[in-house]
Length: 110
Image (tube, rainbow, N blue to C red):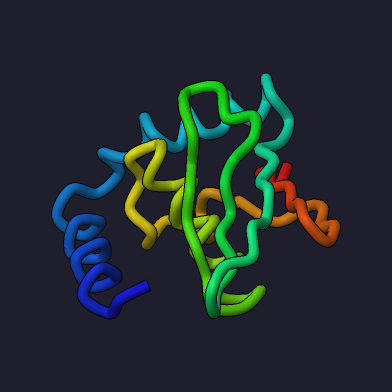
């Protein structure tokens, strides 16, 4: 994630306070109803692509150069799908709950 994007998200968070609480609520309700979002890992040239397989409102796609980078990018992509700035990553409670060689699952902490 770029430094510019993080800075922009923190400025947004400071300026608009909890205006994103609607997105956080929708995120919480989505995971309450659907439990997890599954992602398929697709190896590519020098990176790993993660594509959601069961997101009810479309498809979430992101990539990362390694597992750690991919994990951060998947969390950011989920937040983006709910129009939540990445500065809310910790507050959202999104975490990886399962990983297999070609698949990963994300949910929110209860």
